[in-house]
Length: 217
Ligand SMILES: C[S@@+](CC[C@H](N)C(=O)[O-])C[C@H]1O[C@@H](n2cnc3c(N)ncnc32)[C@H](O)[C@@H]1O
Picture 1: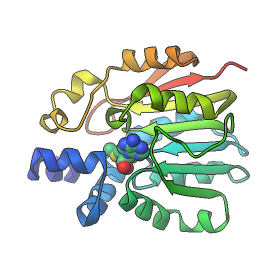
Picture 2: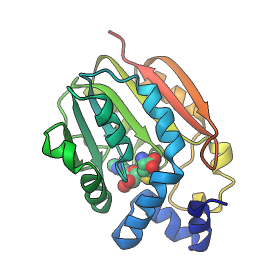
Picture 3: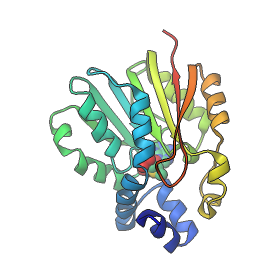
Picture 4: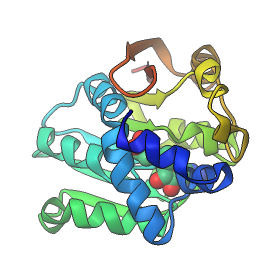
């Protein structure tokens, strides 16, 4: 059994759910470190799905530990990488991990909520979010925000674990709103994304999907 899974079993369900939703304090820092390992597979799947180019303008919402931001920065040397997370603890951890590219002015990480993104209309060419949709306070508002900031032709990749598997985990009855991959695809269609498809990976402790959509040109 992985260290992450042992860690999740050792703590009360409500605390685990709260920390996954919004990591805070010293325990939050430990959750961040565990997630960077336990969610490595789904983050890699999303990275592949982004199909990055050297000059992309990329946003990740809910970056947590910041490992995906670090991987994106390696592939986008001449672009801009933006990240937003509403946990101050995670912003601190991700800033520490990405110190060098932040200093170079290529990466900007801020505290904020998916429901109100501090970016201009049609500014991002690639958008990613991994393991966050279960926690959005208002899914319609969040999806509208992502559509607003996407450039024509932009790509959105949502990393998610399917409702069927998530509902078997005891702590997801607290704080989480689980969702099926089919319903994520419907949400994308409703918000104007096209060419919607999904990729699957089973390298983490449970099955992971990257749901991909594009803006019309
Ligand atoms: C389960 S963690 C996932 C971290 C990382 N993306 C991963 O897959 O390993 C969820 C992250 O999303 C952030 N988050 C949750 N809801 C959010 C919201 N409404 N706005 C911004 N960030 C949010 C949390 O603070 C946390 O860092």
